[in-house]
Structure formats: C-alpha cells, structure tokens
Length: 337
Image (cartoon, rainbow, N blue to C red; front, side, top):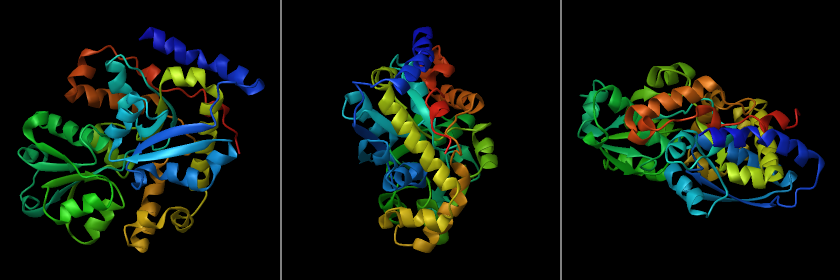
C-alpha cells in the first residue's frame, strides 16, 4: 500500500497549487451519499447543508440518503456518488480489497451507537454471548452498527453467523421494527434510542454515546462519521474537496458554539420523530460526539483497525497501511474562522 500512502502525501503539494491557481477540473456539483441522514450520527452533514455552507463554498451538493452506510459505500464504488459521509471503518475495509478510500475530515469523535434488547429476551440477557440465535436490527448489514455488534460477538467467542441481522434503517423504520417485535435486539443511535428508552421499550446493554462507553466497547477511542472519497477523486478535484472540507469544518465549529435548541431549529422537523423536546435533549447529550476541528487521531484509527481484523477475515489477512486511510492535508488548510 506504499503507493497509495505516497499519493496521499503528494496531496499537500497539489493543494498548495490549487490555492493559488484556477482548478479547471473542480466540480461545482458534488454527489454525496449518506446512509440514514436523520440519525444524529450525521448531524454535522445536515447542519452544514441547511446553513448554506456548501453553497457559500460554490458547491451544489446533491445528497442521496440511503438505508445505511453500506448502501452509501456501494453508491460510491458503483459510480453514482462522488463522496460519502459515512463510517471511517469503510476506509480500512476497502483498502483490504485493494480499493483504497481516504477520510478527509472527521465529523464524529465517537460513534454514539447503542446495543439494546427488545422484547422478552431483554430480561434474560447477561452479556454478548446471549446474542447467539437472536434477530438483531442494524441500520443495514455491512454498516458500522453491524460492525459494533460483530465486534462484541467476537469478544464473546461467537461467529458472525451465530445471529441473524436485519436492516431496519436509522429512523422511524427502526422504531417500528422494535415496537412490532420484529427483532430481539437493536443497534441504533439517537434520537431512535432515546425515544424507545423513554417509552421503556428497550433495555440498553452497551452504549458508545460517551468516550468512556466507547472505550468500554472498543478498547479505545473509535472514529465515527467522516467524509471519505477515493484518492483519485481528491487528486483530480483538490479545490472541490478543499471546499467540502472548509464547509464541514465551519459546520462543526457552528455546532460547538450553539445551543441544542439552536441546533434543533436548524434541523428538518421530521428528524425529531414527533417529539421535539426529546430531540433537543438528544442533541444536547450528543454534542460531545462531534469533532471540534475535523481532525482524526492515529490512536482512534488504530483502534478501528484492531476491531475490524477481529471479525473481518479480509482485513485480518491484508497488509493495511492505517496512515493511508486518512489525511489532514485539507483540514489543515481550512479557514480558522
């Protein structure tokens, strides 16, 4: 993977040139895929878009919201998206398949995923070994919610096929699946988890909505949502990528400097799932999840690699250059204010 690491390192010189010259290949239209935009996991994307920060950068960002992160990844690899707001995990997995991706700005410092038990099996649950034989709802198979429970199962000596996984989305469809008893357990995020918990419809078993909870589940800090894309796209469109990163960093700083009430007002009303008070409380507790500056730490990237290779055979058998899965070249050049 040294070649790809070299290409990422070479972006610095390219970006310097782009800052002083007209980039004929830069695109004003960008096709962005995301899996479950209503989840607070992706709040920085929605805030950045609705505040007009993409437009301020001269971009027309066309957002396609899909059922889960795996679907967003498929859109990128299939050519129907240029960039993805999705889990950092995918940059490692795709490098293992010799299809490298690079994260250019971090949106979430920890995932905010919650494993919760639903229905009659909740009372008897004692630990991850009890997940065997369960039907577990995730945003989409192959998404980072799926990876969390696979990691927990691996820690308990279970295999991936010891449970059945059902894609239930990240919003009202997840709530409906839990309430209708279609699943035995659920891995989801707020506001879904807060809503179900407030109605005593779930029992929380593992919680990564705090850094301490994240360390307890993953053994260290764990990166969440990032903006990722192919190195080839970054090299062909450095000015466009810089503009995207500028907008996201501006959005992250806006989130850090505003109240939960202000943030809620900036969001689409339907994201509140019919309970605005609970939505505001969910946002308030979620604000620490978001990166203050868009930078991703090597420690968290290493944690993700160690987690993935525990249950993903392709990652375990591959020679992964973790340093090539992310770059700070664009974040370093984002305006300070």
